[in-house]
Each structure stands twice: as C-alpha cells, then as structure tokens.
Length: 192
Image (tube, one colour):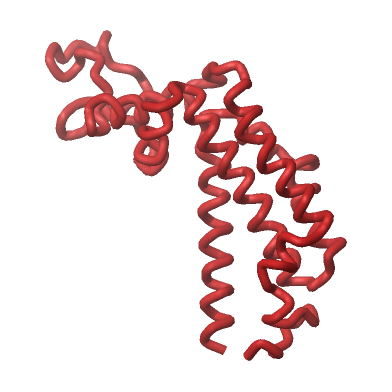
C-alpha cells in the first residue's frame, strides 16, 4: 500500500509527516501558526456586528449558566422590551438563533480569556486550516511549490484573516470541514 500512486503522482509514502513538516512551506505555516494566536490575544477585543453579539451571548450563557439561555429578564417578566431581536424563544427563555456548536466550543476559552478567547479559538482554527490546506495541496498535487502556495494564498488572498480575529465561527467551521475532508481521504486511503 505504501507504493500506491495518487492521481497527482504522489505516493502514500510521500505523505509522511517528515514531508509535511520538513520544508520551506512547512516553515511558513509554522511561523504563521505561531503568530496567529499571539495576534489574536493582542488584537482589540470588540464586537463587529450583531451576529458577533449573538454568538458571544451564546458563549457567555454556556460559560456562566451551563445552558443556552441568555438571561435578559424576559422569561421572568414577559416584557417585549427585554427581548433582543436576534434571540429566539426556547423552552426555558431566550436563546441565540444560531446553531449551538460555537457557544459550546467558545465557552471554555471565554471563561479563561474573556472575549479574546473567542478570537483565540478562531486564530487557532485558522492555523489548523493552513496546515490542512497544505496537506490537501501536497496530497492532490505532490508538488512542494503548490503545497507552499496554497496556504499562502489562503491567508493573504482571501477573507480568512478577518475571520481569525473575530467572534464569528467561520474559521472554526472551515477548520472542522477541512479536518473532516482530510480524515475522509485518509480513511479512503486505508480502505484502498
């Protein structure tokens, strides 16, 4: 199985960790990966738009209460003046309208680092995305130059840096999606 060729000409053997980390492209990924969390902790902590407010309210609710209910007093008093527009009625009170995954992932880092923790989570996700992109490019093309160019283009020619230093969970979602793709490809390689 180690000599099996991918369509790109790369072999299973060529996808070793040594090849993934022992090159100029890996050095660039490593430097960017180390810089991103430091920049996230140094970035001004603030909320950019209403979506970030709602995402952070969900993470705060999980961190403080262990559930998704945002306590505004609405559940107790029933006054629409206490209802935030982008929260929806849940069985126990108002909850964020977005899927709860980001609140669950964000609550531990929020408890440790405050609002910057949500930035840190996304910065780490961007770092993981760079490595996963490098792996996919190397796997698909078997060419070190392309594997160097792919994460560099991703970080410098897209909106990804904006998501690295924000509360939006886009970077985390991208990292999880790419991670699932890499795992699926690796599982497929094991079956073949």
